[in-house]
Length: 485
Image (cartoon, rainbow, N blue to C red; front, side, top):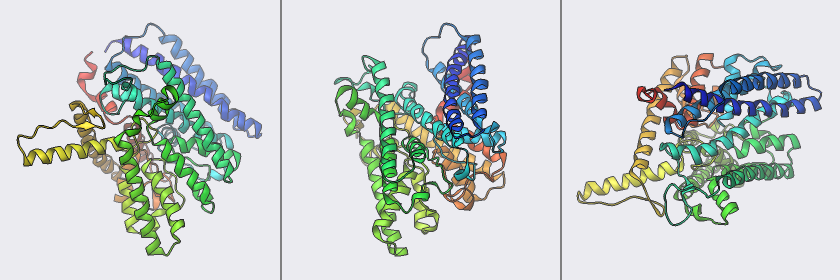
């Protein structure tokens, strides 16, 4: 690899880090308005991080290399790692005592929209820090959408790209004006966030809570301003239903709304993954609601409200909780474990294995069984109205195989730090799927990750980044062939 590519990657990364530094001024202003001394922390952090970014950018500016997969892999990894470190600076310097591992964990959990936290006493935290956590998830959410829509399909490691649907052909021809598409993406993301905040405000949230929860709901991130998460509003069913609706929207392909806004078309609305996603959301919600109603004699509407909220939260990898659902019975715990694998749609803010991969896997299974029965069977597989390319089938199979392998590896590594089986396995799973809470008394919906060792936290940081970058985009850097430029 030539220094030219490293220099260019450093330059682009420094630009994005500068944006993160500029974002630190928002919580600084909030703390200043609230007469909280932490405004100085954010102001100094912005100056420090911004200064480093400007220096690095000035030292590495120059002509950009031609677009290539290798450069894209390098840049994606550099961007997420650098912004995760930059976002940790205010935590490290704030009035709460956080180690480097804690600060980086909280920052990476925010940017990857995982939602795991090491902070207790959220109800009494300075407003600037609460807002910073929410901002990290909101910024990370739009970054995840861009990753799913633009980067992953280009790298051929997953993702269903609707940039291809411009006419009747399915070639790699994007929109005539990509800037229009990007502008629509940002506008829709902002408008949906404002709509979510307004809805929360109308059902009884304070203005500050409404803004914070809107950012972390639409980004399917799950950071809350309360230790009890949205259980703080458990006596207000309308709040839980607003959260359920906007978590579901956040896990849909944003390309649908973009096509509607830019082209006035709903072509992608027939995407098979939406039916799969909707199907397992409804199935888990009803199954758990009926089970809880029958075993705990809870009114059905209450059971339905909490089941819909908590399982939409898990499936969309948001990580909110309205109560400790691990106490609802063993069936619910097993459902929660299964739901953690799922995820939303490609091109959304959610994580997990994602619905389109399950759709393709089941189509591959059906095709394989048919070939076993009829050796001469030759049948092409379709994804909706489009022919499914062989490299997409291979990418899905490879992703799932590597995902399961790494899940075992991370579980074993966490067990070596002294964690029990449930905590180690669910911790590895929730980090790789970017869900947030795990299972058990330590990291379950009623706990957090503060008591874990620094070693365990660093392992989970790596797992969160791997999960957010769809695993293969990170592992490719370990290949010797990647560095033979």
